[in-house]
Image (cartoon, rainbow, N blue to C red; front, side, top):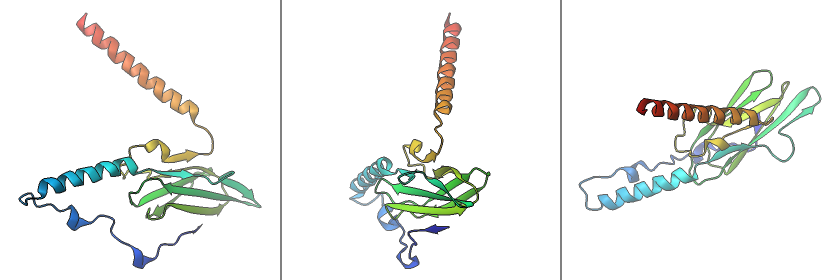
Length: 170
């Protein structure tokens, strides 16, 4: 694997200022600091969005006997969180890379005997502040039928609950 950005170990900084997040409830400025902390958390909640986006053209192309795969991961918000990026190949193998999230984007490349099928940011759902999980994965083939089946199943479940509730009161 080769990637375009190699983080320098000396530049690693804890993105959470622990001292600033510690609030003494007995202090006079505690209500203002708590309000500021809640406001910062709300801003963070809206901004955390990571999505793998293939570069222009195909994300996987055949080069000789191997497939050249490129996956670009993009941080859309201002919050800095480390996440994992998982790529699944058509032979069933998986590659998991760690991204510190400090750069605005990062490009991962692989040369393998199998073509990539999908890429996903935060496959273990560790980052709970991400409010739009729908943009965290991308497949090379559209999955429109899967979404339609899921929505249909949810609608039928809701309809069944409605009919059972009606039957209970009648």
